[in-house]
Image (cartoon, rainbow, N blue to C red):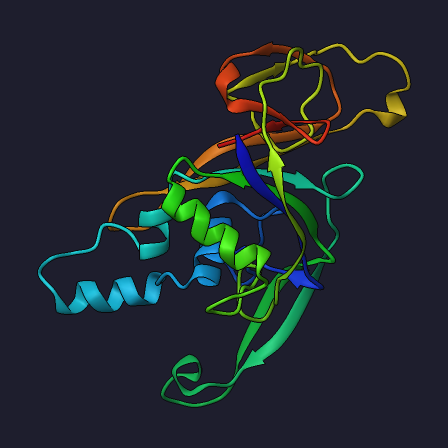
Length: 250
């Protein structure tokens, strides 16, 4: 099965946690599937949340999802953090939002506090059984083209897409480790730590994997990135081998 891979990076990124209502906006530690589909959708020219909102406000025929998600939700992706232990450093940014609608009737500045990821990098793998969609993604990525500017969570954070190439996915014969982010609902890892404990790591985070129709509320899976050995694979058809890596495709 033929797919694509590319390196995705940026100076900064901010994938806002919508469920946090505080004076400080938090970010997920990794790009998640919904954000990745939005990025790919922007490259091939699919509409987003704003167009869905405008349509639903003016039409009786409501759109269930933004166009990018409607057309790309079945795209299979794998996300490999390009960091030693699956963690990118974050820095708190404080700045003024002085636009009129943010300042209120009395004027003044709205102080924004956000955590930004610093120098994030991922290796992205993807494929689709929909050949029309796959051919269009292939055309734009391999051709270095983009309809809209891709960014990492917000338009403050431009995305850099490099080293795009076609790859072949196959079914692995034996899986001892998973080299990508993987849902803990699909894999059990060995509980015992052996050898050099200093080199063992397990990074966990609940990440969005989809949208609820009409409301655009995230659905979540518990993800892990680890070098621990695999104990059991609960859903073997979601594990693929590519370029010497065992990847969770979802």
